Image 1 (cartoon, rainbow, N blue to C red):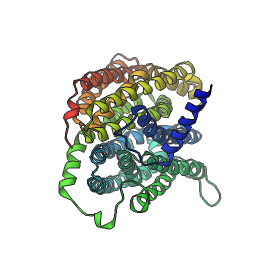
Image 2: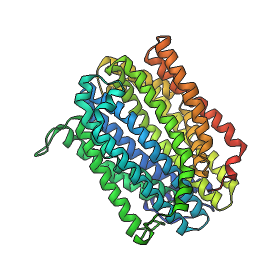
Image 3: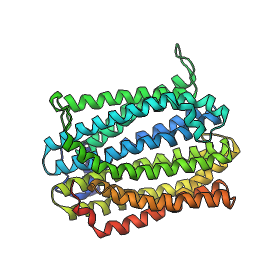
Image 4: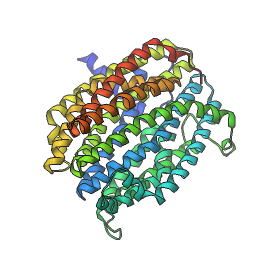
Length: 468
């Protein structure tokens, strides 16, 4: 009993250290401790993101079925924007982690600045297009006229204000690469805390603020995430991060930028392949009507509630791989990946049982329409069946990215999503007339295939030789 109390006390101490951002060296000492210290703030960060996703869809579900479907269609398009943001983020994490592992803080700072400059440029282009072509975007996704009229304001605000979302992703990736996961966590706490408070105010109206409906959700998102970006920038310029930026650092350094672009191209292509497949899946789902689409959207949001913490553990693996390769310790980097994968599988396996048993009850919390519940519950059950594979697939994929080898996951995504998932979804759902069930089966089997190929390729060990 005494040893157990000592262990619990030590875990509590580690927990406090991890969320307060104590400066640690993750290239020495216990790997399990390093995983714990990095994973806790990253899991909490992603939990905040997933909690907001659930709260957001719960509020919007009270507006209308069209409002829920609008979010699903818009976010399918926004994920294409995120592909660029996440591609840049993967490159930033890999290069910053490598420089920190090499004890080259100046190089890490240079890479961070160039990543932010690239992110601002991309967001300006997307913002202009989103503001002027929001109706056309929804129509392209197969939305009906009444849905477009009700939801185009949401699309306009979300795409037009993508700068806040993109920078939030990108700067948090810089913090993670530096090992400052707690700062990234607090940025998400601020962002999503504000979103949760502001959502009902702008959606339903309160005091002098009128009722904006589904558009209010996007307004709240911009305010919440914009506030978090200001917090991030204040930490970078005046805060406690390992990377501190001064005005003299804000200049164009072509050599550093081209290196960042080179590494990010694989990541951008990787996520364009993955996210564009989701766009096509959403397009197939729209053929079955707004109620089926709403059920699918709810299921995806609920699924993200547990995938986000799992992604947090995967991000910890990416940081450990990058820093340990920088410190010339490839075997320690590999051990970190397998241990993280095991912990992730334990977590995802437990969650899958809950979803398989209570999928329909969970869906009914958000919408009582029987068609919505039937399709949302079925989608959750089928996707949960592959959760243990998802766990290893995510960790190994992020390990590749953390090493700077973004090309390998790109090739794997191409096979799993474009050459396998999309044809299977179309054949089963449309050609063989199985309906939405065919799409759900295609999603799970493709993720299982991705995990298997990733593990086989990871064992080859070529990622250890990548230079960034």
